[in-house]
Image (cartoon, rainbow, N blue to C red; front, side):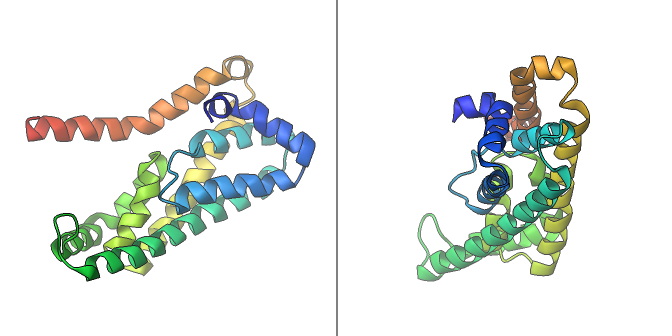
Length: 208
């Protein structure tokens, strides 16, 4: 997995050489699973989309087809994760109150997403790991579905197009190609930076 992350451009290029259009299905599944299955939030979403854009600019794949498939995967993944959270969350809270699951927590989550849910769903798209959990928690909190879908559509579209365009316009610059591993690290770090800042802010404000 680590080697795949660090040399994702080479792996995807090899997959297209050997399996052709079937590779589009693999790309779709990676994005769908990262956003749709809360148990695997570690898949390489940002760097994958960036590399797809770079390969599209080099003519190794059809950028328009990839864009459509990845956008659909991102949106559909969030929808699935929302419904999983809604189903599992309600089942858990309906059992009985205990030290981990209380109806009070559910009501507080619902209230939070009613106030800030749209912003959370949109911004989390650009934050690895958090983007996997955000729709799941929205489902648990029974966030208004129409509101969830509007920000899900906007967030999924923006996330894919931003990283796809980044790879398309910058991925084939000689410096980027010669230092692609460093670029992948930079993408991962920049993506995680908001989460790191929020974490330390919460630690500082809590006095821990």
